[in-house]
Length: 334
Image (cartoon, rainbow, N blue to C red; front, top):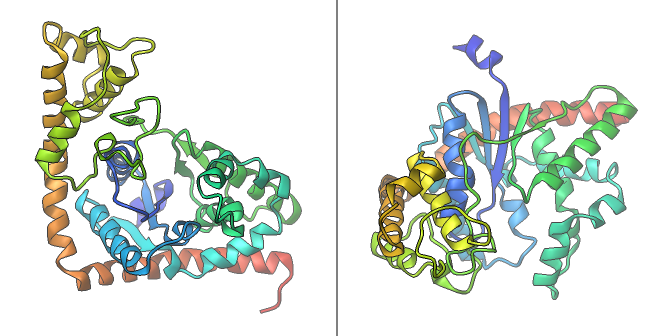
């Protein structure tokens, strides 16, 4: 068993516990987290430090931390197969973030598109953490010397910065950091809003019919899909400018494994009403075991705490080695 672990490539990824996780999070990332455990050594974190760049209500934040951990277990992540922990429980994340911030250029951070977007959304709270959190993200990754980092379109820029900072540090001090490669999952979907399909599905959307939560009740999921925006063509196939129907086909394909052409053939003589119902039913059945498992995990807080505490101990082993090496290279004394 130890030989198998050594030969596996390592993957690191993290997800924020800010608000309820959506169908977009599930199909775009979490479903692949489970799939990757068969091929890789996987280290997964609940990125609570990143979440506080936006003001959090303490009791709601604490509840969401538990909920996120329970969801990750409910999708099938087994603590015996993966390292699963809460970011703030491994102090080296904050420590390496400061060290790397001294090797990250102001201009690099100022070019981050997410900083510009979030500054516009939270104009009353443009804090230093919001500006510098890509460096914390770089520390999150580089602590564990991963071979791959799963990335979506909105995270590519941050991984590029991580690679640039690691390369700069290595150029000065030698081969300290492994330069991680982006991992593009074989199966995945960029899930768009059900009401504004040119925008990514987001739990912060004020329109509750625009997004589906992983833990939504079946009747709520069906209602949202039946209200999903499409167009007047009533033809089920992918097409330019047909964002609504393209989104529904993408969701159905990601769940069933069918290609867009196969979906079009299946519904060739049917209308949008039938297709929306079929997509909603597929989503309900895909998420049903997750919801049921979630109820079991969230009912046992002690078990959750034991799992993420054990995960933090495993993560700290890797993190401490990296930070020690970095500090020695820079010249700090023991």
